Image (cartoon, rainbow, N blue to C red; front, side, top):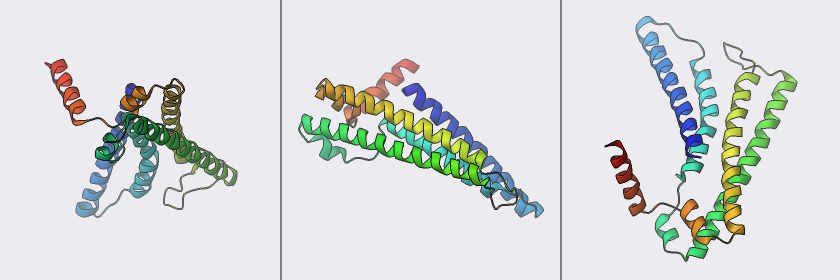
Length: 185
């Protein structure tokens, strides 16, 4: 799953880097040459719509979501495990819902042959098809995590649910950083 997460992060990072360069060039051209690259705002919207699900997948896999760790870590381990399982299953349900919504939107776009009301008049099936791919990446990540959490729950592996799906403690983070430093040295 870490490779999956890193691939999503790299693709998103490259998309945003290219987008930043295009926006910078467009801004300089507009200010210095009084010329514009038509459609930069259109590309920005598409990049964010496609990139957001990739970031969601990274957040899910890396357990980087927001949680009140201090409260969570003070709960009994069974309660921690139950909350981790509930959070993982709920996230998978949300991902599936968003994926179905995206499929319906793309089908409707295809049915009506929708075109962007912008200078480029882009057939919306292209960016929405990529959006669908991004949502599929997010959904697969969440479903795999939910299956793993469900397997641990069926095995009654409370420690596994806490360890794999709970927040990292400060000690865990420091240990991971030390391991990375030793690996690089």
